[in-house]
Length: 207
Image 1 (cartoon, one colour):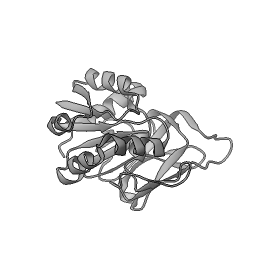
Image 2 (tube, rainbow, N blue to C red):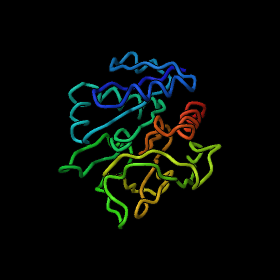
Image 3 (cartoon, rainbow, N blue to C red):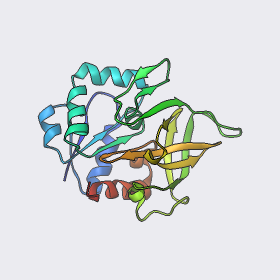
C-alpha cells in the first residue's frame, strides 16, 4: 500500500514516514497532484499555526487537488495533530481562519480546569465510541495512552463525528472522522505501540 504524506511545508514528516514504513506502508512525501492521485491513501500532517498552514496549502495550489481527492474521489485521508484541525470549517487561533471545511467543526482554544495546563503536552488515555471506533481496534478503551501537544481542539457540530476524547481538565476531542476522513489530535507516530496499532488499523480498514 502506498501512502502519500502531503508536502505543504508544515509537518513532522520524517517520524510519520518512519512509523508508516515500520507497519508496512510504502511512503512518498509529495505535493505533486499526480503522485497524490496515484497513492492508495493520503496523510495530512501539521505542526504550527492553523492560519499559516492554510496559507501554505492555498499558496501551494493543493487546495483544489485535496478537495477533489478527499470529497469527490473519496480517497482515505488521515489527519494528524494540526492536520486534523485543518479538516474543520474554521479555527479561532490568532484570529479567525477558514479551514478545508471537510467536517462541520470549529477549532477553539483549549480551556481546562486546574491543575491541568495549556498547552496540553504529554500522555493521555482516550475513550472511544461510535461507528468509526474501528480506528482503535485491539486497543483498550480508556486505558491506552497517546502523546498530545496542542493548545486548541476541535468541536464537532455532529457528535457522531467525534471518535474519541481524553480528559485533560475536562473533555478534549482526541480523534474525529466521517466516511473516508479520519484524524487524530495526538501524534500516533510518537505514541509507541498504541500509535503503531492505530496506523495499522487505518491502513487495513476497508472504506
